[in-house]
Image (cartoon, rainbow, N blue to C red; front, side, top):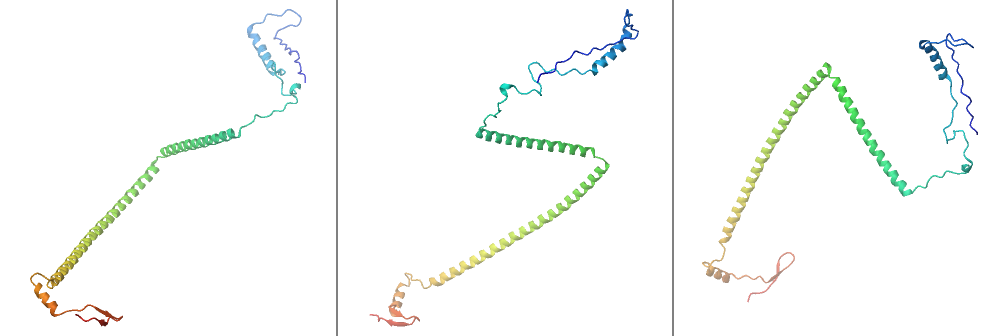
Amino acid sequence: MPLPRPGPEPRIRCRVRGQVHGGAQPEVGGAAMLPALSRCRALLGRCRPLPVPARGRKSRHDPPAKSKAGRLKVPPPVDPAELLVVSERYRQYRLVLQALRVEFKQEVLRKQHEERLDRESGEEVMEEHRKLMAWNNAENERLRKKREERLRREEEELQDRKLQGALNHARLMEDFLKQKEREVLQLQEEARNFITPENLDERIEECLDNPRNYNFAIDKEGRIVKQSMLS
């Protein structure tokens, strides 16, 4: 489609006040020319020039060239491995960027909250703060007394446990000593029947006078059923 050729530029005729047609023009001063120049500038502003395309370019309504009429634009091939790597990197980049945005947003909101709290430091806020501090001190005092009472009870229980442990240990030692004394007395009682060099002859005579035969058989009830005679 051929471009329309621009026509001749419109001519604007300005007639100055006092100008006479067809005769000699009177000489006009600069002050009288200012209104005429203003009117000419306004007329030039209302005139819209025709669009002229740049050199070497077509307008948006021009058809494609004949040499490019049957060409199909094919996108360049994409490597699947490279696409996977790039997609993963973009995903990580978006996650990091989102985390940074959230962090910066939280910081801005925190600063705004702190500034708002600073601005609201009026008499009512100070009175509420004093009440809260008084309640906090009273609660701390109550918890301190409760903690001291608990520690005192724990100390008393610990002392009682130590005393009970000492009593149990003393009782066990006493029982142990009594057991050892009984064992010593029993050994002393048994030592009277021991064979010593002093009573060796007497024990030999006693054994010869009272012989014992241990060669016998017993039944299920423990009765002696068979016994050999001593030679």
